[in-house]
Length: 456
Image (cartoon, rainbow, N blue to C red; front, side, top):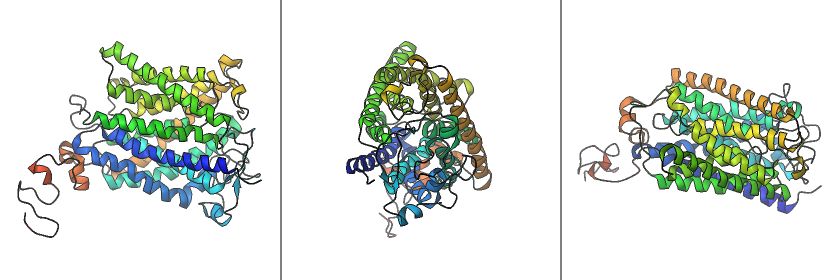
């Protein structure tokens, strides 16, 4: 059966939308750090596109979606990389309405692979916010490459690789096939995975100097709101694109993404109003992202009323969770744990509460508690969330400490205090005065060496 042109176009357009999310995330995070560290924050996100883009082609796709190698834990036996898809260019990823991924028509394998690549790119980028303003660039590059292979790709195999999905005899991962947990667009694979890794990496790198007595203020809140807006725009590809077809389920996921995010913004702002007496722009941006995170695993399995409830719970719950880092003494710089780990956990568990099989014929799980089901699906969701979170946390600790004790992971104290940009990248984001040349071509105000050696 030939692919439907509309479905292929929708999946490729969705891939482009998800790709835009990583620069959007860079702006979202970049506005929340100090002016002297914003370029490093942007670079930590953008370099994920380059690194993961190559890792995915070489081995990541095969590990995530290749024929299972060992009891549903890892793929890639004989089909590491995209060579099989390239040599068999007309090969299709067949989909079955009985599987958790709805989609009545086949897709070119490369279209599916590129769509999934964008998920693989943004997941390590999310982690960067937890260790903002104290991370060396090249060790971060090493971390992203290793983490994408050791952590992201196996977890994607567990949750996304349904039996028979890429080929009739393909064997996939244990969470989707044996456990029966449901994750429409990556609440566990992307958000809980990144959130648990962020928790581990924040422990590995330790607190910023002076924290919590001195907390850097966001240098550009409009940047952050712009980034949140780009994330919201791209998230339609993330969620609605996960239907893998231009159909009614994609429209449902699009609708649920919209209403959940709206509800989450209001939920976050109400918490701010009651706690501090002021709703903030930063809160609105953070609430939007919290709602997007929470609805991701459920967007294709719930009705709009369920989506609104998930949005309110995600927005208000993540706002309250932000205070935990102060109690725990954990310097999660930009609240990655509170928004992605906790928000992803809310969304994953709430599938077991609000799942409505009637809205999606491709949903293979049990009905949620509020739609006539028992605790079966909720239990499955809890097991999936717990295993993914624990594996990601422990594996990231090992990778992080190996990098820390070999090539070093954290910038020097003076670099951190003055701003990471100048020392890591020899650049500054803003030319504000004569000292702007410090760390670029010289340090003497008004007299510095240009690249051609002239003194100007």
